[in-house]
Amino acid sequence: MKRALISVSDKTNITEFAKKLIKNNYSIISTGGTFKVLKDNNIEVTEVSDITKFPEMLDGRVKTLHPNIHAGLLAKRSNKDHMETLDKYSIEPIDLVCVNLYPFKETIQNLDISLDEAIEQIDIGGPSMIRSASKNFKDITVIVDPKDYNEVIDKIELSQNDVDYRKQLACKAFEHTANYDSIIAGYFENQIGKEYPQEKSISLEFKDSLRYGENSHQSAAFYRNSIPTSYSIASSKQLNGKELSYNNIKDADAAIKIIADFDEPCVVALKHMNPCGIGVDSENIFNAWERAYSADRTSIFGGVIVSNREVSKAMAEQMHKIFLEIIIAPSFSEEAVEILSSKKNLRLLELDFSEYQKADKMEYVSVLGGTLVQERDSCVDSLNDFEIVTKKEPSTDEIEALLFGQKVVKHVKSNAIVISGKNQTLGIGAGQMNRIGSVEIALKQAIQNESKELMIMASDAFFPMDDCVEYAAKHGVTAIIQPGGSIKDQQSIDKANEYGISMIFTGRRHFKH
Image (tube, rainbow, N blue to C red; front, side, top):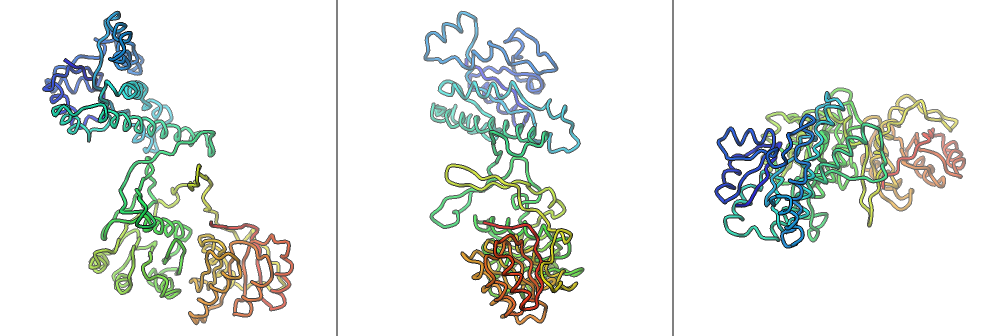
């Protein structure tokens, strides 16, 4: 008769699994709460203390950490010396380990939990048994996921529980313990405020397979943080449409990062991770929508819309006329869902905007052979930190527009230029190799809009020459906001003074590569 050791925190389907193991000629060893559950269900089971000859102690902290357990797990059946050692000490081998761990992740998601309470949910014996059994996968079956119970039983009954299958289970088990330890390490890093540890593990859980990556010849998958981030596409609720693609997820992520900077009613239209139109209004989200859409009616084709207020029937009727990939909002009216759901492929995502302040503080970017880690650019520039460097001071309306443009420009790919009014982008120049190119693109779009609003220009970085200032002034820009810091700043200031426009230095760059 083979022996199975069962010790689980998640007791889903454990009694059925144990019964099937017994039918397949396994005897059961168990611990604490699992032992009680099995015993209460009339399953024949041996308590682990009968194997170790020691009672559980230290409030259950020590129960399986014993040679009678771990020698039974680690002994190689093909090694004569190992088996003779087991005989010498009257230790029986263990052939199957079914263990899942204390709910540390679930515990720390309760913000009222104290450090001491969290520490008590750090499993010691469980990972030790899993690792011992996984190391010895050539002889032992290890299960950490209740979803695998039926498959394991099928493999046993069909004599297909071979070394290759056990290796797959061992791999999953090591992934499980590595993720568990990563969550614990992350918790302690947060406790002590350690942002850049010497060794860093990122804890992720599989969410979805994707049809392909950025292009159809690239494979891809979507993982979410093991400790879920509420304000994230991974936590959104999809109300309609086909599954999200790799590019959909990246675009949607960029969109919700942008709109998180706006408290007033705001709509962002986005294409290829750059905003093509942003509109705000002091009260009315429909007005914000109209401004975002009218900013660039061409580029939004096939793009993403995000609204930080409920999508109304009136908004849905207008959005329905356009080909869109995704619409994101905190809620949709019943009429809006009905209207927009008539387009079967249009993805509607509901997201809890009240949690935006809990968004990830750090961001990770993959490079060949490594990962870049940095604090996310969540900085909101303050008027108090700005310096007016020209003879002409901006008007009250221009200051309002400059602050709006400055919020937008940090979300545009460098080199980035934003032409805007007080509550609407008018033209956006993104990702050009030289700054004047971005200025020309942004102003071309703004002029096409035939806006009667004032026009300001925001730049994510300084002007290396005065050509950008001159071009802007000649095309109707009346105020400029930029970081400053170029050795030729004075030339740009002089050019602004020559054309009678105002310019503000912020002292802070906002590159987005």
